Image (cartoon, rainbow, N blue to C red; front, side, top):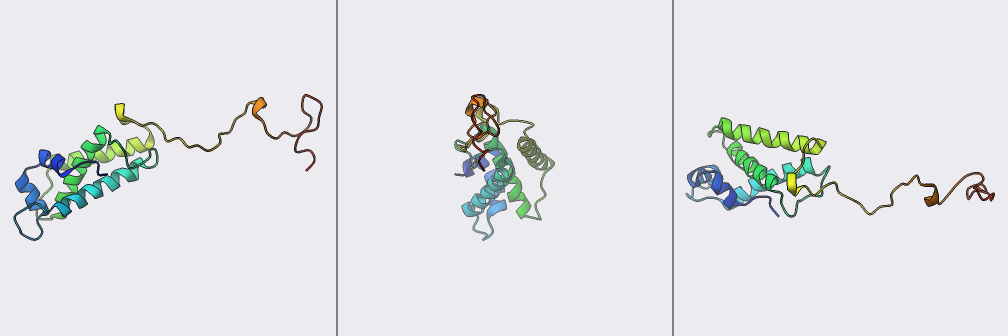
Length: 151
């Protein structure tokens, strides 16, 4: 599941610009496969940062991740065209997204109200409580030999 849609991109950038950025065949229409590929590239980049702390892909998609996916996908569309200069605003949005994702991976910030928290596993957990011990060495308080003394 993609973190943003073509409609999300269309809300941020003019349709004529989307045509210029995606129409490799010269058909005069938006090439949806190019748009989908730039969204997938942005999402893969997001997952590469978030995968160390969260289960990815996100489902449901946190609002901040959708926002940064849009910014990154548009940046990737612009970077396909060397003749179209990436505006300072678009460059700044992309840089902010990367900065946020780096900080998120380091645990310096969260996804806000949509933060799924740290992933949990169902593996056994270590404990230091005496009553939870399975093996012991030496004499137990009951005076019997420890379970590992015979080995």
